[in-house]
Image 1 (spheres, rainbow, N blue to C red):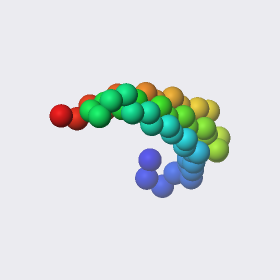
Image 2 (tube, one colour; image 1 turned 60 degrees about the horizontal axis):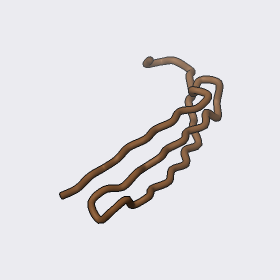
Image 3 (cartoon, rainbow, N blue to C red; image 1 turned 90 degrees about the vertical axis):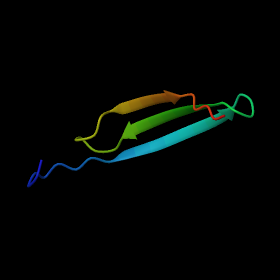
Length: 50
């Protein structure tokens, strides 16, 4: 919100693993560093390219 004093900071870690020449698995972990940030967040993606 404009004019608020909220500060949000996260520490993010990620790992990528190649399944084959076209697909990878990406795992993401975010850890909140301030009270205004979520405690943690998890992400998982499987990008694929032709």
